[in-house]
Image (cartoon, rainbow, N blue to C red; front, top):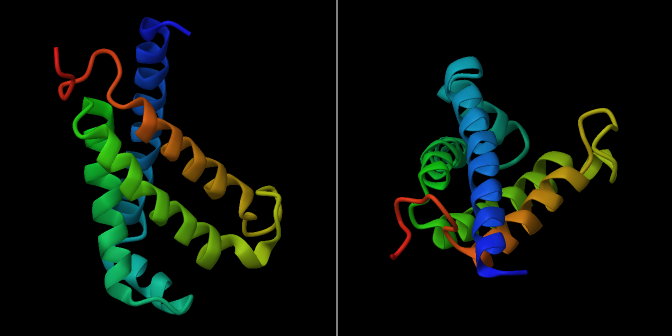
Length: 131
């Protein structure tokens, strides 16, 4: 793989995952509301404040990934968020994400993708790229 291909791959992963995180965070904000998100986190045994923090990380992290700012760090922050979702939100539903309530395969896959993106870095067409 040439550096150019790695740059393009990082760009594709960065923008697509950033958009997914942004949508998830905005859904928590607009549809479920901050109080509803905190209540859900409490219902699964987590502190309600973690719901607010997760929403903030998803929105700001999604925007940062789309823009290509601090991609390595943002991607690394997303890994425990995704593993937490897998463990606390989906582990009891089995492996397959098509199971009722969604199994843990999907958030774990995204955690691996975020780990790979942290290794690739900003890639092409990013505001954080050092020229």
